[in-house]
Amino acid sequence: MSKPISLDLRKRILQEVSSGRESVRSAAARFLVSVNSIYLWQRKLKQTGKLEADYSRSGRKSKLRERELKLIKKELLFQPDIALQELIDNLKIDISVSALCRIVKYKLDFKFKKRLFIQNHKKEKML
Image (cartoon, rainbow, N blue to C red; front, side):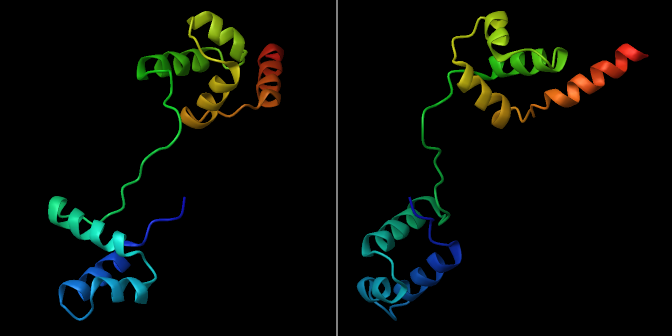
């Protein structure tokens, strides 16, 4: 999917068309956008008063709700060296290990640095 046209360019195109200096077709050709885009922007501006691009998240929605995410985060803060499969078993959630890995990395923003945990754990034992 291509990037959306900038808000500034949308405004400039619609100013040209609404002032009557250019037709929709000539503005589309001049600014290298589709005629349909200009009509859609006009309709959106009329209906909502906004021209910003609509961003939608594509892909499957997460199986886990906010409650489960909080439980996972709480468990990881309590026991940072827990294995993902063990976490799934403890919380009794229906999700694959790879999906949980992505959630932990990208949604909860946890980093997996087992080496650092082991070093800190050894230091605690020595004290």
